[in-house]
Length: 199
Image 1 (cartoon, helix red, strand yellow):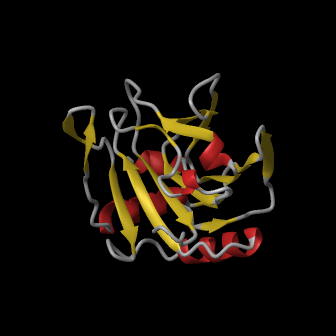
Image 2: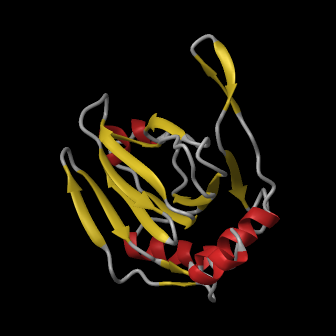
């Protein structure tokens, strides 16, 4: 982010507020909790994560060939110190949802070419219920959600410190994606998960 963008969007001391949760009930026992602007000072968090993290790339089989995964990822603390605000956020979310969110990872969407296809989290989509909390820092990106296997999608924009929590059967009965777009500024998604048995 350029200095002028930092000044406009989130260049303040990081802090967070979980009080303004919007619950969205979905069919099939799934739900979303959203807090717009949950993280103040998100631009400072973005800058630190971008600069101090050992970002990894990955390759996956798609049809008959191996392709680059179009985003970077990291696991904390293995790939860097993260940001000091991450652990207080993790503890607050763990307490609120009564679930020990011990795994912290991140995905870096560097521009509009970076994306993630329709999916449910690999382990969580096999579970009856699962909880995943994501804090988006940096510029907003479109986030899509649709019933598992297809159907009409729901869209929301996540960035600038927004929190989205997917719970209940969401990972199993719904799929989510971040589609490619012609142009986008960078965004980092910080994800908090429990340690699942199959991890």
